[in-house]
Amino acid sequence: MKRVSCVLLPMLPLQILLRNKPHWVGAPIAVVDDEGPNGRITHLNELAKKNRLRIGMRQTVARDLLPNLHTAVVSPEETADVSHELITSLQTFSPRVEATNHAGAFYVDPEGLRRLYGGYRNWATSIHRYLRARHWHNAVTVGFHRQRVLAVAMTHNGVTIPKSTDDERRQSNQTPLREFDLPGELCESLGALGIETLGEFLVLPASELHSRFGAKASALHDSFADDMQLPIQPHAFADPACISFQVDPPDEDQNRLLFAIKGALHSLLHQVRARGEAIQSLQLSLHLERAPLHQEHIEPASATLDLMLLLDLIRLRLAGLGEVRMQGAVEEVELLANTVRARAEQVALPGHQSRRDMSAAHRALDRIRAAYGEHSVTKARVREAHLPEASFRWEPIQHAGLGKQNDSPPLSSMIRRVYAQPKPLPPRTPKEPEAGPALAKEHAIEHMYGPYRVSGGWWKRLVERDYYYAETDHGDLLWLFYDRPRKRWFLHGVLD
Image (cartoon, rainbow, N blue to C red; front, side, top):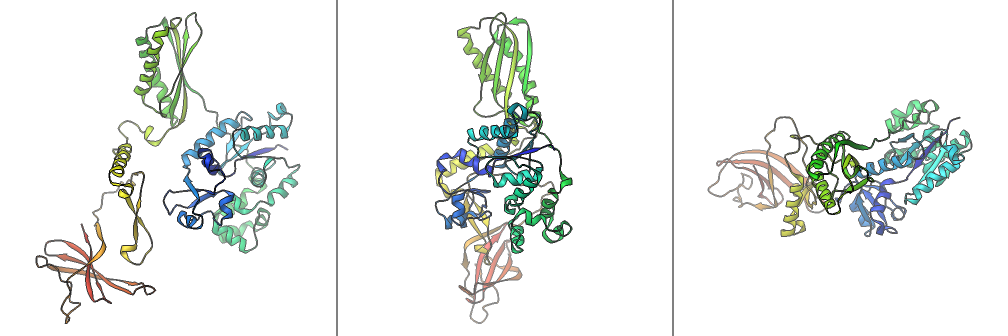
């Protein structure tokens, strides 16, 4: 029976974070989905788990329980780049490598090359040692069923090779359900029924899972069926981004060479852009007439698709060669690009780039913070509260972001400018306290719309407010309320 292997790097985002910040080793660490206080925890190390922290907990709650907690965001783009590098590395052990939906898990076909290593165990051990030498914590399992080898890898370290399908089934059935990235509510519902492991879950009848526990529970159950065994869908090998051209007759004039390189570089950039990548470095190879191959390494400060920038770097490198003089005329030029995944703004077509320069926006925010302090650039964060003035708070921000684009026609909307503290209005005579607010003599209210009752706060201070929109004779629209316990009108804001 053909075998299948699973290579698992458990908690890959957390491992990426530790590679970026090795000085955090030995401290409680958490990966969050947002830098703000309301960001939720997605991954935890063991030390953080021992301090009562849980996946899905908000960062503010976690820091209250553990003030010395280290948190950071690992972007999906960074995880995708690392996964792409890992696929390329695993392709040296097998040409058939498939990335799974589980972060850090890869299916690898052990057939074909295993005989070169002397068997499945030697082959799997070579992968394990290769990743461990590069400081990746990993587990390698060689079994018979795609989903079950993944389940075994989740609970085993190092290399595991089940002897038979029954042995594989027995080991995989012991895997806790929480390892499969199921929603916490689903795990709690199953836990209340005494279902904690995969084996206990697979005993449930598949026909009733969708109606009782939802689509994710049903999909997980179906994936372990024997008839759902799918062949490995291998990741295609990435062809190197390279281009070459002949120089006929051989030439050593740098200006003419640079002009020819410009045309080749333009074609190379078109090829790289079509793959959604950017050039991180260039290998320039000059085949000389009756002389050894001459190579130069060109690397910009950051990955780029800027033709003129790369051409200028090549020009400077060729100008530097003038002092040494090449040993012969150039008869062939080859450009080999080392590429990485491009950012969204790098692959935008000419004329379709955003009109807003986010780099300029970030520079402007940095200048404002430097001039007026760290808390001078903030954004409003909505929160639950029964009083309008407590329904939001201001939080510092580090980076600007583009708002969502809407193709529908713009709708006119009212902007409510809320005062930090409601402003008391002059009191009415005792005979008619609720007849209406008293404004300045130069303003008179023509129409009032409301009331909109807001009440609560009995646990601290009784609040009973009747909110109104008041239109003045000058066309101003005011937002005010009548405080019943205090029997007085307050101006809470204005509308533009």
